[in-house]
Length: 256
Image 1 (spheres, rainbow, N blue to C red):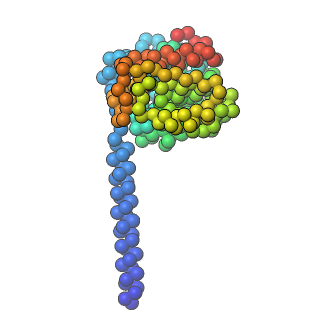
Image 2: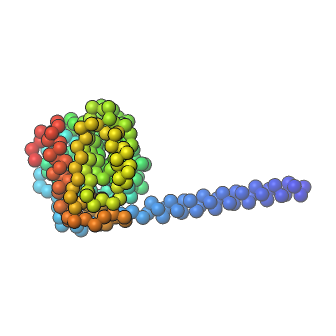
């Protein structure tokens, strides 16, 4: 009888401990996910207001679409980790005015790892786009590369901003563009160099002099980043110009 009571006590003790540990883990996760970089909408609307001739719409899942009438080249963009997706509205607007149909994905918990196949919704919603590219910033770029690897033959190419590909795409018939800031201190350079071999041999690499990691979007300074020598708006405009020029070297024919 005594052993039976003792075993029941131990059982409830372990149940109590398990519930406590689970509650702590849930709390830690909630705090972690609630702490993210917010889009600076005041700066965005001041520097990059909506443009005449470029339509902006929100899909049912929250993705944002920026496009000129008749755009046939599309870019699906995955935001950086724990960054509000609207922080990349300026870059999308700048690319859209150059004739690129841009889809800015809204990720669950602001982490692209929870929205690996988010691009599927965008492609289905925009059947008139003939040529798709995919890309992203930081963690978003890593996940975008994984999405491309999972959908071989779907995309024309990959665009990485302060990012790299962990999946082997070296033998795939796709184009690849990598843009980094010279003052980026967030990007893991060792991983960047190690994973360069995963990209096609004709990889185009561009370094924006004075640029940093955070300035591909508009969400303020990022922990651990370097000190930029150019403005946030200048880095975004130069990035859009480089992407537009690169796209012109492939199957891209819309007017700027």
